[in-house]
Amino acid sequence: MIYLIIINWQLTAVVIVLTPILAAAVSLAAKPIHQASRNLQDSLGEVNGQVQDGIAGSQEIKAFGIETGRETKFRDQVKRSFTYGLKLAKHQSIIQFVSYTAGIMPFIVCFGYGGYLAVQGRITIGYLFAFINLLNHISNPLTALPHYIGQFYRAMAAYGRIQEILDVPEEQGGSAVIPADSETALEFAGVSFGYNDVELFRDLSFKVKKGETTAIVGPSGAGKSTIFKLIAGFYRPQAGTIKVFGRELAEWDLKALRQQIALVTQDPHLYPTTIRANIGCGQLGASDAQIRAAAEAAAAHSFIVSQPQGYDTIVGERGSRLSGGQKQRIAIARALLKDAELLLLDEPTSALDVESEHLVQQALEQLMEGRTTLVIAHRLSTIKNADRILVIDQGRIVESGTHEQLFAARGVYYHLYQTQLQQAG
Image (cartoon, rainbow, N blue to C red):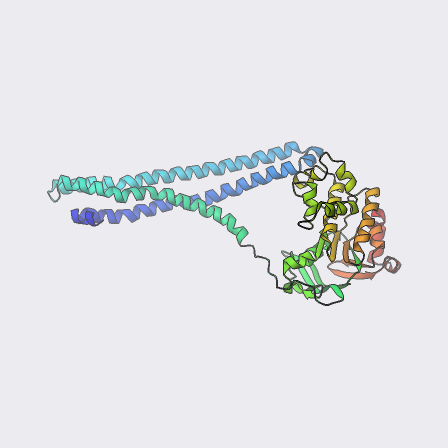
């Protein structure tokens, strides 16, 4: 720039005025790339999601004969992604045109105005060519600028998607790692909770003593599984307090809290690795003998050894190579291996046949002995074995007692028994 001013300040002034105008034009042309790139990435995310769902749910898709509908939906999403890709390519082409125009414009102006000055004798031809040669050091970066601006906007679109995950609040916990001295294993006091604007609980209160087996029953959608998620610290109550082994959730180090809890859900998650590794998740570093003992207690050993590779059999994505009952027994074996103080059982025998259920029920009864157990119950056999039954309805505990007491009261539990529990039992 200093050399240009020395050669001819008038030409340099023209370049100085022209450069920010061209830069602004380039920036304006590049701006739509951000939204176009975001739309494309969102759409490709939908495509990938549909592919994943299609593979994971291939059996259901075939069973219900909805291949055509799923394929049409997938094709429409691919076409949408293709359209967004074309729009992005169009914007990139426009910015490329603008960048070349911005790069050559200073030379055209300098040739025109510089030629005029040369004709007037105010600058020599040699100085003019020297000026134009030095102008490359300004024009070349200006030409490259749109490329980097476009890259910046595409990166910002990707960063925006990543930031949505990064902005999710981290789990906050305290420092307590051992239970407090308390006879109460679990206490809900005035707990309120809901998803978005839908309130699920209001002033939910109950206590569970150490060593007690408590069954939770209620209509579908009453929030029974959400109670388990609150206990495990996956969610925080919007009002009220939850105490686990005498300490509030906020006091617990969440990792230490979860070491005290074994959770078995209706649809257990299995990793696409071996049966041995899936059971071993319950206690890292467990020996083969411990894993086998847990499998035997969960009535899983017999079917495991019948597999081609035994305990080294790969279960597939989400356990796709196993039946529902087999997956459930592996999940129960994992919970048995963990040997936790608090058991959260979301009807763990619901996917088992009668014979397997009987064997697993015996193993669970042995496991539950001396431990605190909270069971979401749908089967009468589970309910009758509980020390106490909590009936939840419309976000509150409406009844509490044994099966005989609640049945005799002929309230909510009695009607649930008549319509659901009796058939499930």
